Image (tube, rainbow over all chains, first blue to last red; front, side, top):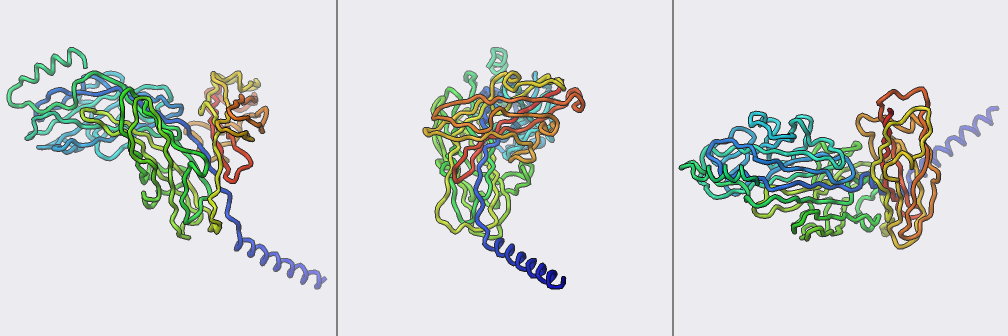
Length: 178
Length: 305
């Protein structure tokens, strides 16, 4: 009986050593590549023009950009802007040579008071839509394939500026799956 | 731009002293857009010290299409994702230079497409063994003078690093020359206790196709989200745990260019699913017999009446 136990202990020890040896010499695992989400696509109508605005005013765009998810999966939109040469975007009431551009997904033209700096102001950092971010009676969150959204903008002009020529602010709409 | 707005613009132009510049050119309205072929790809077991092209690794390029009627300039940037963008417990890549696109800057004419390579450069660092990372390839248009809008698409690449070093010098390759569409299929108005044929429930049939120039052996599998390289869609439960779902054939051979319709059945038990409940699973089509395992997903959603 003792011999049997010793033999079992010996076998167990051999098995442990053997397992350790296998781990030490493990082969590289097979690489796998899985496309989990296929086509993404986004389109939008533009441009949006504010026309001539006066210092320290706020103006809601006269028309919306229609943003369409023309891919085949649900998409969430992120928004960012690129500053013109002479002005800097802020996410609060602007001062001299500063401006704020706010964006809101809404079926119809929203009143200017419905935009808030906290939820609707754009910045140079791409920010994802959420239940509150850029939200109106529509959102840019989890937009179904083939669905459209109306995107409205409010422009808060600098309180004063040396610039009197046309300025272009570019808004980038980025779609990601989800 | 509407006439009312033009009229307002004309009126404001003459406002004394307080006139600022206008934003954007008041030319006619147009639609612009961008499309790409890959929204998310998940890669397992990449090796440290290697550089991978997804085109070489899996015949998986990123195809970008300018869907507008105007020419555009495209940039493709590799970005470190924000923590809110991370999926599947991945970490952001420590350095954006781990990833790149080739080419990363080019022009596209109206409706034109271009194929680019997504590249991953894994440092030779054993502390990376077993870790999982995520990188974003941001493809976006560069706005032209006067454009207020530009367009971007984020392709997520999630990859894990093998736990051992690969001492061979050969980069393996696979071939994901396979289409599986539509990518999302929804079955509405399911009544528990009644067996449905997949092909009868779908507005568009689920079709697997060989897009290569050589014959392919393909395996079709049903996966619950936990088994798969994706996640359960919020608000949905596991379809395979709640219903009996079968595929009529799970191994098929496809000649070059050939397509086949995926058929099968769905049966929910009479007791169990409550009205309005929503379920999902994944159909995976995998190319067999290649050094790199390549597969593509389509999601099935089922809504109980």
